Structure formats: C-alpha cells, structure tokens
Length: 360
Image 1 (cartoon, helix red, strand yellow):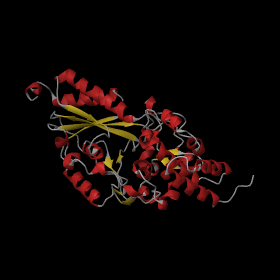
Image 2 (image 1 turned 90 degrees about the horizontal axis):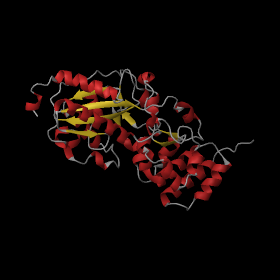
Image 3 (image 1 turned 180 degrees about the vertical axis):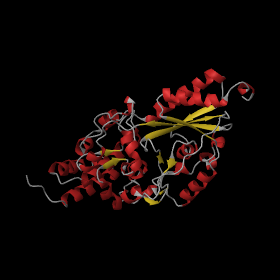
Image 4 (image 1 turned 120 degrees about the horizontal axis):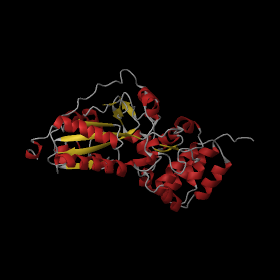
C-alpha cells in the first residue's frame, strides 16, 4: 500500500473523501486514529459496574471493541460518518402527552438504518479505490464490537454528552453513525471541546433516573434497554415510569438544548411507515404475529420479536387512561401467548382497574 500512495496527496484525498461522503448523503465525515485508551478505561469501569445488564456482547471480544487495529488488523485510521434521521414532523412531544398513543423512538419509525448506511460506506470505499486502487477497508454500522461514539468524538463529529450520546453544536444528536476502517495513513481531524457545561437537563428528566452520573448510563434502568435489549420481564419498579414508550426512549434528546439545531432528514427511508409515529396503543396490540412481521419488515423494531412487542405494549396499555375497551382486549389476550406476555397483561389489567372510570 505504501508504494501505491507515493504520488497521492493524502490531504487532498481526505478533502475528496469528505466531499464524496456528503454526495452520498452523509452530513459529516471525520477521520480518527485508532488510539482509544481513555475510552477503553471508561468502558472497563462501565462493565465492572455491571451497567451493561444482559448485553453480554459488550464484554465479548476482549479489547477488540476499543482497539480497532485488533478487530481489523492493519487498520490505521477510521473514517466516521453521521447521517440525520429525524423526520420533518415526528409528533414527538405530542405523542408522549397522549397516553393512549404508542411512542416509538424516532430512529425506528422508518426502515432499518444498518443496510442503508453500510451500502453508502461501501460506495465511499469504492470511490476511494477509483483514485488509489485497492486498499484495506471494512464498514461497520452498529454491527460489531466498535466504540462508534468514541471514534466519532476523536474525529471531531461532536462530543460525548452527559447522556452518553454524541452531541454536535449544529446538529444535536438525532443522527446515525457509521465507520469505515481503513489502512490508509490519512491526516486525522481534531476533536471538538465538550459544550455541555453545567447543563444536566438529560439527567434531571430521565424517566427512570438511568443517567446515574454525568456520562454514565446504567442500562438496566434505561427504557431503551428495558424495551429492546431485556429479554425477560420488565421490573415492576420501572413499568409505570415507562408511560407509553413501547420501543426505545428519546427523553434525554428531547430536553437537550443542542437539539434545537437538529435538521430534518432528507432520506425517505427514515420517514415513518405504517403511521408508527401516531398509532394507538390498542391498535398495535391487536396486531397478530403475521401483521407484526409484515409491518416491521425492514424495520429495527422486528429485532425484539412479537412476544416482547406485546410485552411492551401491555405496559403502555396499563399506563393509559382507563378504557373499558382496553380492559376487554387485555382480558381476551390472557393465556393466548406466553407467561412473559401474560405477566404484563395481568399487570396492565390490574393497573386499569385501579384507575378512575371516565364518565361520558
């Protein structure tokens, strides 16, 4: 590879890569080296505290997660990319206030982002090849042991905020990240400074107090973890706090001041499908498994499966205002699925029966 690069202006190549990335639909491209020592220490402490819960994959692969050149030997740099996903009118706050509606994290309203971004990164690699010839590379999109936020921070895409998300002064945090590991010694970008200051809105507003300290999230308390990663029963202590959040949670993003600057996505694939940005809880709960599989094809939602989908919706129905229709449907659904679903359906029935009845 060194001989191939003899006549290549790496600084110009880097500028070209950033331009090609924008042409492929990425809002920003950065270049990082592979030294993540400080972030590795943070990861080790986080794991030691058991904050990863059942996410055993976070501790697999040894140091490969924090050492890109061990995960992909020969890696010298990482091209990082971000792509906005927020729909133009996501009804975000209004849906959270309508307790009989289902709130689904905004990133999951459209098609799954993994394939789309990986394809774009592969196209970027091919574009580079047209200039320098074959080179070592591998694309990642939340699909392998990669510290993507750490790499994005190192490459100047933003800083890791107190809610553990990557924040950007001109784009907030409503975006996906992707990485292209390469064996090219490109010039690296400088990190930006942290601009959270004394603000701790994300800490104060977290429904389950999952942000246990600045930059430290206990996943075991996080609604995103509880509704997506947790395979068993949702602990009762968190069910009422979940409200109508049935897949993920965006509260720490909604209150972040930097998200005033977030831009709406231009990607049609990220726009809401099947009216998932404004569906009634009861309507979604009435989906049979065939409907669930059909309506979540190509969606991040499908990964939790039908059983956990019903589990999450049952909790949302238990937290909804009293409705005789809700009680009737929940009662009909008892003993139709699994012990996991039954536990949450029974809890929801009990919650509904404790609520004041609405007089029409």
